[in-house]
Every structure is written in structure tokens, then in C-alpha cells.
Length: 334
Image (tube, rainbow, N blue to C red; front, side, top):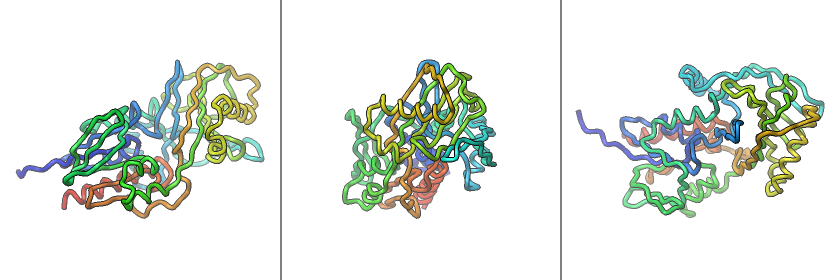
């Protein structure tokens, strides 16, 4: 049999887009080195643990609009990496709080959302966590990376940047066409408050889409399959409110989000046990038109992907990574 040349690929960003690239690259011809500035994988699928409590801090569930992602969710379910979350959502708006049943099939990683990303990351040749890449340069047709603690990595034949567009732009030459495409694509922030409490609040409510006030979503995290039984909640603020309060003092943010929660649920008493407040600077694409195809420069073997490239959801991130991997596989097999 002829020798098959293995292509070294660097993927910056271990969220679902980067992991989808890893998942769909031909392992017979590619070896992937994965980088992420965080301690683990998941990106906006991340979870948080404080004291005896844990929460899904970013994406709250997975759902499918496309047959491709529906099939993938079914496969992950069969593998035991995700499980259905049979929740009846509520809606809160100017007319009050009320059930809003639907037929959406929602899945969550078990026992937390990052269980899925950890499984997907096992396919990487190497994974460098807590590694913030600050420079990417190409020499003699190969990519070399440098981290903020002055470590060097490379050479790589192909570079994939699976980061929010503003962060991706920081790694590109300012005169490169992809720089303007990334730098000009807006992302919206979101304050997220995680808390556990002693009281059982509104036991009939497990998830709420909120259409007024500072919140846009709240969920009883402990209602998801595989979670600990303590009363744990996730409150996600709207993008508009978060932008207006982007640099407000954290105690003020927490107080206002808790007050909104009390107002919606009628909670008179709230004895907090564990809390965590997180500011997502790049939570959601701002609604700008997504590119018609994955952003790439085939001559430089440079690719950009993420939910901002193909729909503002976990599904969009997965589809973007899948499309990117298809381009790389095609180019390297020609």
C-alpha cells in the first residue's frame, strides 16, 4: 500500500465548531492539535461548578432544524453522550407567565453539557488547554503559533480558527480579506447568573423564555437528566439589557437579575447557597447575514468557522465545522 501523508492541522477553539471540524476530518490523513484558552472543552457549551452546585452556563440544550443535525443528535443519544430533556417551556411577557407547550425535542449532555465536548475532543492528537494563542504566522507554507506565555507550536499544514469573529480577527493580518469579514461581524453580550437555593421555587416551572425585563431565559438546571437534585437555576439576561449594563458593578447585576427572577416566580424568600456571575462578551451573533460558505483561503490553508458563520446556535456551530472539514478533506485529497 502507498504511504499516506498525514496532514498536521491546528484548530484554535474547542467549542462545538472546532470539535465538529475534528469530528469530520478524515483521521487517515489528518492529525489534529486542539487549542483552547479555557481549562476544558465546550466553549459556549461550558458548565460551571461552585461548591456543591453545578450548572450549564452557556447553551442550555441542543435541538435540530436540519436533518443532518437531527441524525447527529440521534447518534449521540444512542452513544449515551446526550439525553432528552422532556421539558414543557413557559413564556413570560407583558401578559404574564404561562405554559407554552411545543413539540421541540431538546437534548442535553449528561451529567452536564461538557460531557459531549469531552467525548468529541478524545479524537484530537493533542489538546492544549489553558493555552491562549496570540499569534499565527505562515512560513514556507506552514503555520506556526505562539501563545501568550511565549510557547511556540508547529509546523501545521492547515490552520482552523474556531473563535468568535472579533477574536479570530486578532490572529489575522489586517490586510487579509478574511480580517474584514471577521472584524465586521458583530456579537452580542449576555450576563448569566447561576445560583442554588434552599427553597423549592415554582416547582411546576423548569424553563422560561422571557420577553420583557432584563431576562431572556431562566431554567431550573436540576430538572435536566443526570443532574444533582439541589435547587439550581440559570438566569440569562437579554442582549439589549446586557449591552446597557456591560460594565455595571457585579453586585448590581446580580441584584437586578435576582429581582427579575423573584418578580416572575413570586418567590418571597430566597436563601442562596452557591452563586456564580459570568459575563459572556460574545454570546450570540448580532443578526448580521451569515457568510454564504465557510470563510477560507485555500491558498494559505486557512479556515474560519463558528456559529456566526452558519446560524446562531449550537447546530449552526456544528454545521459550520462540518462544512469546513469537508473543504479541508476535499483540498487535501485532490
